[in-house]
Length: 87
Image 1 (cartoon, rainbow, N blue to C red):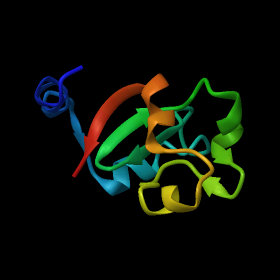
Image 2 (image 1 turned 30 degrees about the vertical axis):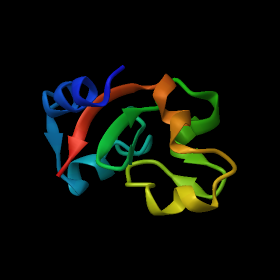
Image 3 (image 1 turned 90 degrees about the vertical axis):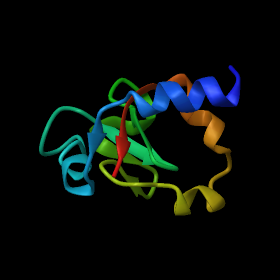
Image 4 (image 1 turned 135 degrees about the horizontal axis):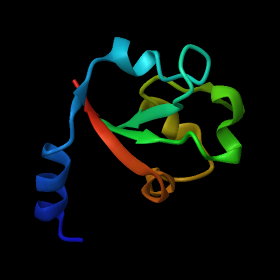
């Protein structure tokens, strides 16, 4: 997908605050969401995010800074649905 088209689609996503994202941690609500570089992804159905935890990482937060130490790139999020933008 061209970068400009992707930006346009992302700008149409609903926005959520860090506090709203924090509630989607698999504990307070059934949704399990994570953010990366301003985009929020729904990882609820991933077996790797069972109960809102993935190795030493917890859902409901922005994982952009932690990605540098991950054995994968941000492209891992592409298989998950984009549900919003973090503001």
